[in-house]
Length: 238
Image (cartoon, rainbow, N blue to C red; front, top):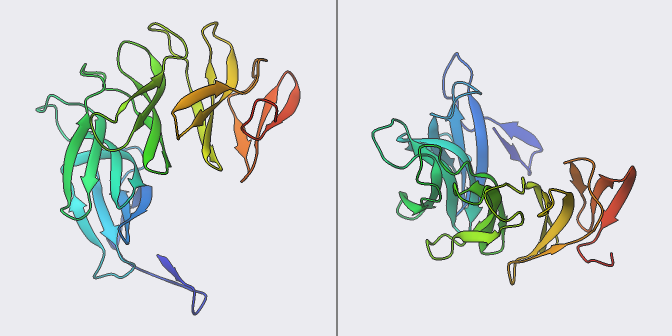
C-alpha cells in the first residue's frame, strides 16, 4: 500500500496473491524507488527483492537468486546482507552492493570466509557510510563500516581485543553521530559514540550499563545505568 497525501487516502500499490501470507522483512528508498523483500513466511529469508514506484505496474521483482536478510540505502544504491539460495557457492551470507542503475549485485567483502558467515546485523547508514556489527572469525563481534567498496570496508576498532566479542548493540543515529552499547576490554558494558568524520570511537561514560536497551530522540540518547536513567548528547561532558 501507499498513502496519497493529496486525498489523505490509502491506495493499494500491488496485490501479490489472492491467498497466502506475504511479509516484507525490510524496506529502503533508493534512486526514487522503494525496495522491499517479499516472503511467504516471516521465518524465511528466501523471498524476492522487489522495487516499487507506488503503482501496480511499477512494482516488479528485481531478483530472487539470493536470500535477503537486511539492506539499507547508501546514496542511490543499496548495501545488503544476503547470501546464495543454496550451498553450491563458496560465500555464505555476507556484505553486498546493489547498483540500482544497472540492477546488478556485487560482493563488497567476504568478512568471514568460514561456513559460519560474518553474522552481519544492524546496518546503520550515516552520510556516505554504513556502520554495522560483524564477526570476522578472529576478533569476535565488533563494529565495522563500509562505503560500498572493498577498501572502504573494515573493522572500526576491536573494543574487546582478541577473539572475545564486545557484543555491540543498539546502533542509533543521533544528529551526526552513532551511539551504541558494547563491552570494553574488561567486559563492562558502556555507551560509546562514533564520529563518522574520523571513525573515532569514544566512550561516553565510565560506569557499567545494566541493560542493553537505549531510547533515542533527535538530540539525546537515554539508557539505564546503575539504577538511574542517564542522558547523553554525544559528548563526554554531556
